[in-house]
Image (cartoon, rainbow, N blue to C red; front, top):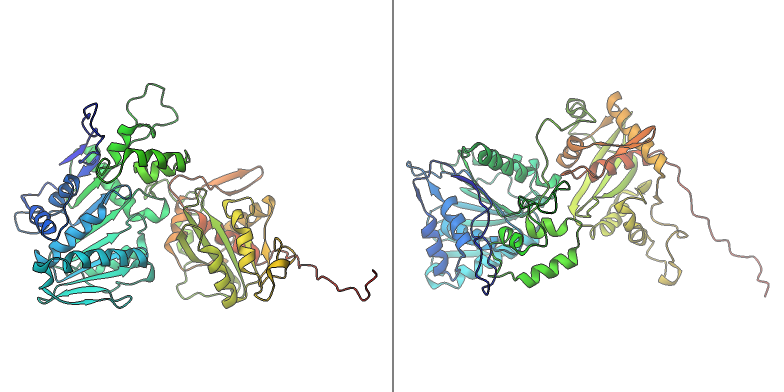
Length: 523
């Protein structure tokens, strides 16, 4: 069963605009003969969770069964903009796993701990608020990092945060991966082997539009769904549901009807099944005015994502074999250590990377690659106090340049009083902050490239850095080149930060001039 649906039917002139209850992009395995979805919907209603038609549709298709009783879909993916109600699907699936399907262990993971905790509290309220379900609960664990609900019959629902490395080694009958747009090879590599011994496992991915390199796994699932749609042959093990629009291209003429316009309420309805239910058209209009035309509204509300590619267009600058050959899982840095910061153009992610010597080679490492930028300054302070780096490197002309004042403020010695702070340039910081010129950035890029070719660089084969290199492109700077920041679908901030950190090992550092007290005061 595959389709590319045109969107919701036209509403009557005086009726509110309602979101499409069917996804624009979908594929379901052809082996479906029955479904546990209706029972899951009825159980959710018993617990006080009334599901929208689109949520019921996902459960019906996602819980399809083959004639041998096994799941038709090993993997179920829901790609829908925020605040539409994917949490209701998660909760209904968890209730079904615990109370209907007899799944011994259900693992719910999210990228961040706080998201996992919110999900735990929501399902706990549903279960404990329903007498018929509450009486089957043996215990509820609320210890931080050990949150779980256990039934008297032995079924367990556990909540984990992927960013902390939790869940490795747990064998779940059902694994629910929330925030699926932040899910890469490391997490999947830890998860997949644990499911090989499970008789009838199922993976559920739930998230919103892809945000570039962190969306590696979601990109793979979407590529499989698109291939099924284009070929007319359903994917044999994937149920995929995406609410999104196909936006206008630069070459579209004024009368184009094939692609969607961001200011067209009909496009909002195609991408948001909860429009007119829990999301109002007025709110969407306000979002559009607030987010502007930089692509954020299209991603967050219209489901227009960017996804990494596994195709032949990868590894164009540095060959994958050459990069992998430099892997040393036991490598570490020795003093001096340099840290560098970079931020994506749309400011969705930031990276802190480090470089230091390992014998004759230079060790490079991704320290942090996280959503947003608000965490950077505080983390820089922690790293500085722990490592005492030679310097921090930030390209002042890049998106990371806006963090310079916050960085310097974070690196300011605690004993300095606020009145003497100024812009920080005249204060002896805990570590110097270096801002390379354009020619020095070109030199840094060339030096990293040469080090790879000469085998004078070692790394830990971290996924964010490998993904960045796989999609990296060159940006011409006359007779030199640097990394292109505008490569579609790729977060290259780890690569840029590693490049700057390596350069910083030999960069000239201007020491702040000491203010000399006059030996006499002439009034």
